[in-house]
Image (tube, rainbow over all chains, first blue to last red; front, side):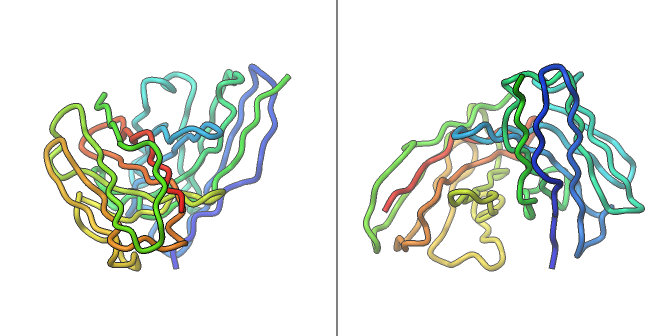
Length: 119
Length: 106
């Protein structure tokens, strides 16, 4: 059974950096792209970016470019999303999700990590 | 970016009803259209990929159709557990834009 288990909720001050993890079990880590998705409370879903764990290549949405870094540790089958210069608008639930190829659907999802940015 | 527009944004229906949700892309995306179900407090779940392929384990009352710019998700006989918000998403290009969601109430 494929499982994506994310790290716990975070509370950060404006200007700080948050790093969320997503540990994969049940499939070959390097065979799937890993995506990150933001969900503002009560609002919709927004794609943040992706990583190909096999070679570390990343792609980011323009909205987050320059503030987000996605990495993958193949030894621990864990992906990370780091978001810097946090502001109140970054308060959201962040999900990791996998796709089997670059244009594939997101077939498995983590449980979500709530990030709260507040002074 | 490709704009994904869903309608309606919310609907109320009864158990056993046929429910249809539409999704329109701002440019042609072929069949690179996926549908997700998000129940309250849960992560999204893949229902349909490449416009009409049913994800393993998803009940057959869910179906998808369309290509190009216009797509439809149909629930043939609404069940109480279908209370959720449904999102379309294009996987034709980055960013992987989602529609605004369609909340189904029973």
